[in-house]
Image 1: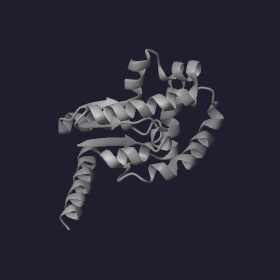
Image 2: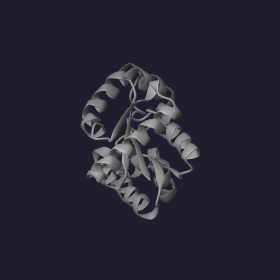
Image 3: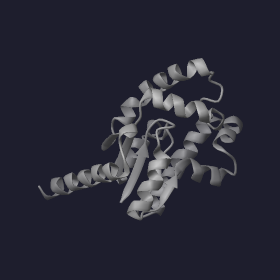
Image 4: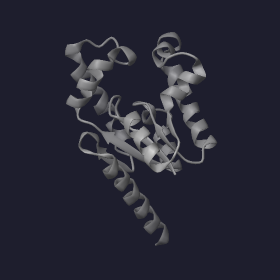
Amino acid sequence: MKIFLIGFMGSGKTHWGKQLSAKLGIPFFDLDSVIVEKEGMSVSEVFAKKGEEYFRYQEKETLEEVIEGTESFILSCGGGTPCFFNNIELMKKNGKVIWLNTSVDILKDRLFRERTTRPLISDVDDAELRRFIIKKLSERRMYYQQADVTVPEENTNLEELIQLLLNEQESDRMKDEL
């Protein structure tokens, strides 16, 4: 089983990924963390020293490596991962994609506290953060909406998330039998 968690930064992908991993006994990877390990510098440093285009290319390569090199996993993807290089199609072809759809206000509250570690918002001032999130979400929504399962993150719990995943797998099994 290969599960890809997508959603805007701060939507809870790493949080839920770790919980799903522990409950299902499947390895968990955070795509950004794998890139950080490969590059030997933080995501913010990669953005600053090599640029977003370089980072996005490394993101695609690393996504492919995880898919090819691991039989079963839960992968927390960066917020922009599905939006570049047809990554969303690659994920859908190789596993189940879950969109953690989190409200703008919850994202704003979470990201306000984490701004210094997020390169895309490190220079966005407090007053502009909500507008930035709305703008970026509207740009990314068409990619996120291609997920196999959409979860309203702030209203879910681990058992509901697992049930949604099992329901999706059962639906796929039934389609295959028809």
